[in-house]
Amino acid sequence: MRRSAYIHSVSAVMGLAFSLLLAACSFVHEVLPPCEHYLHFVYDYNMKFADAWQHEADQVSLFIFDEEGNYLKEMNISAEEARRNNILLDLQPGTYQILAWTGLNSDDYLCLAPADRTNSRIKDYSVRMNAEAQNVDRDLVPLFYGMQTVTIPDAATSDIRFPLMKDTNTFRLIIQADANNTSSSVPSDEFEFSITDNNALLAYNNTVVTEELPLTYSPYYLGDGDIHDSEGNVVLTTTCAELNTNRLIYGTHPRLTIRHKTTGKVWLNVDLIEYIMLMPTEGSLDKMLDREHPQQEYLDREDEYVIVFFFTQSSNGNMINVRITINGWTVRINNIEM
Image (cartoon, rainbow, N blue to C red; front, side):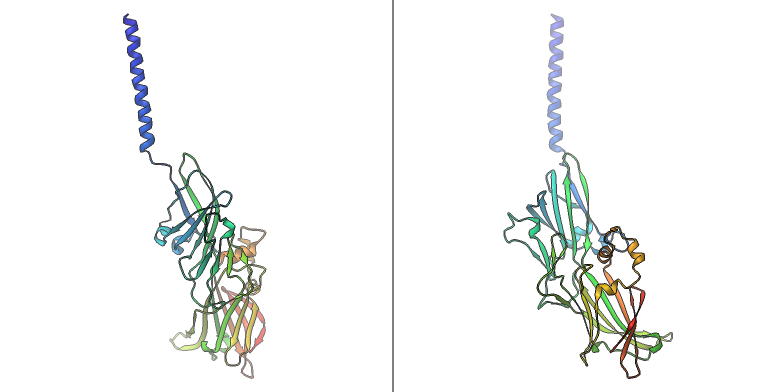
């Protein structure tokens, strides 16, 4: 009798303990926060091979698609949140395709997407440069691009590294007298500068979509710069122009043109990418990770080009272009007279 009562008591205690354990597990499940997933932007696709996102951070538009590329939703990340760079993704476990562009909140770019996005797909999305009469003459907000397949795990947190590429380029064009002809100066209002390229439209995968009409990029800054001697005297005046372009593609042929306003004569009309590749890029190309397409990787990593045109004057007073420097590299060229 006592043994039976003892067994009954032990069974009752074990049953109570099991019930409490189930209740505790349910409680823990309810109070523990769900697994969180964070996205972090990285911009190290530059010539320094170092992350510069904190310096460049701006508003980001994220377009999220399922694994098959069907549209799910859009997230707009403010510049402040982008600088904090700890973007919470409210996504269920699974595989997604995420498309990112910066600058879509500016007047510089237009996101082209279906008005009704319910049944849209990732291939339906693109970005076009906002150009009036096919001319761009303003300092553009930098356009960054990224696309990545992301897997959200089940029952685990995750930190997702999201690389970005900068599509916007800055060109600083300078005309100045050669060292042997420092008495000559060229007022900036004597010249017209332009770059012509058919690269206004970028597809979802960042490829350039050729359109019927090209764009003409004109300077947003045009002025004179003085060079002084050791005593502070102005020894010559240079002409300076600064302009932006969209992404450059190796194998295409954008034109750089410099025209003399008074005479209308074209002083320079060259293939811009061929000109860039004239400089000793071998050392730079050796650093590229894409061994099959190092030239394109170089054009995508480099976002600033300083091109200086040195001239002398012929006996009849015409300007002769004798050499240029591109990002510090000197290139000797056949004399171009104007």
